[in-house]
Image (cartoon, rainbow, N blue to C red):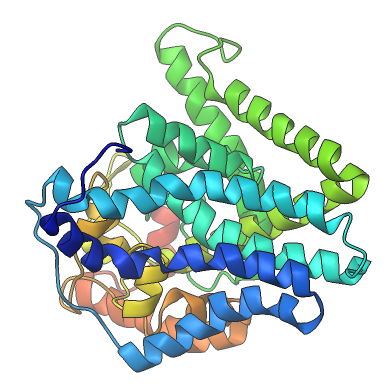
Length: 382
């Protein structure tokens, strides 16, 4: 890639991809906040959450779909932004740990809130980019995904996402499918506990099918633990105990951001149980879709989640959006919806009527959902 000659066609492709590069502006913003201190430290969450919410309101929806026959050349500039984010995030997180723990103009509260903002971007952007990269076959991209997840101490997300979530989404065996009426504050501790155990069990089961014990070096958890330990040690070396604490703050905020998104993506949606422990195939209707333009730029089309689960191998530029006849629609983009999720009464007021309408639209034959959900859970959770 480094030796690539930029042609006029490349420039045209770059211009189309540029909106998805806006996330890179958060890197210099983080450094600006650290150097200025004071009220500017609030800019990281404000820009990430509120600016893009306002842009969504102004710019509206993008209902256009990319050509599914796009070539690697067509996707080059889109793919590149996901590749360069990992080294930039590494330099930012650990550079700021070194800087902030030595900056006399920052008091303890400012340092903590600064790394709260850093966690907003490592969760909103970093984990999202790792999600794109982990779905690719390229070993370099998968290594970058692992690196980004280790920087927020959530490496098992790759195993849980690929081996459990995509396989069991919309069923009782999927930890991160939020149940109808399950508030985020109940969902969050449950997921923190269950996703780690289900991810480890899934890897253990894969090794067992090959006749290997979980202690075999092929278990990726050993790589996860090694990467996470390396980053914890690096934070300690660069910033002492204060630096380690700041690293943990950003990791905790990033995980919270990820699970907020997981919560809203499938809330209340279920796949029909066909009997014998089998469920219908995943369809676009089993994920909430959002076509809001600006937040899809920020989140590299993650909100086209209906298509992502329907066709998980598609790179983000060619993810398709769906109309109301094919997929349930969120009323707002993820920035607004994640804020609503923190207030369960507001969330239920917004989303429960939509879930009930979805049920009536796709499964009118099911009249007692409480009884159905109980009967359709014949298998123990992984």
